[in-house]
Length: 198
Image (cartoon, rainbow, N blue to C red; front, top):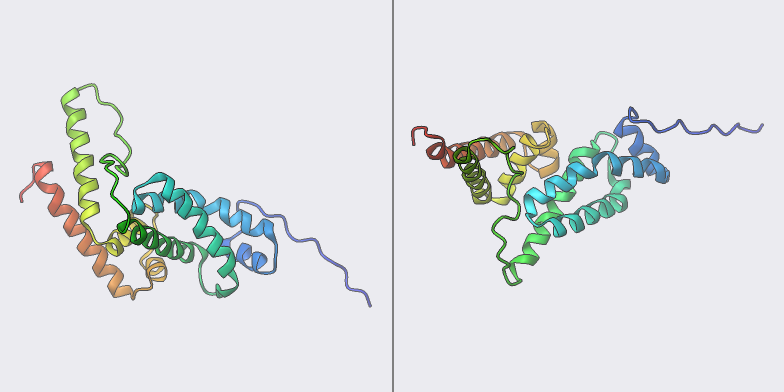
């Protein structure tokens, strides 16, 4: 008896990541392309925050998804794609920074700063905003790379503590501790510039 071949369900914005992963693992290139399109902007932003050089971050984004494609068969049914791909991105970023440490430094002071605040009518206020952005960037740069990555995954990308634990390969208590310490360090660095108690 012949079995009827069913056409795969169409991929829509509502198709869950888990279904896309399962289909991509069966060899459907459109499913992996949908995962790429869904997550590439967030991964690129995360890498730009970590690497702080747009060209290197763009290359690292491509490398992240190339590795994800190769390693996709290893992704288990209970694993979630988003924290998993952020974990790959984190490893790629650390490799890029390790290689860069052995290369001559380029002076690009404004690279990697947060986006400028909307222009204020008051020039003094604009200057203060820029100074605060610089202080925030410097405070983030002073964090250890793993701690900064965990904080960015939480604040900038909205991952849960469980998802961050999966992405970083940490225990849940370690995630909470590292993010708490990162927030304390940022607060200590920024309070003097906000007019708060030191």
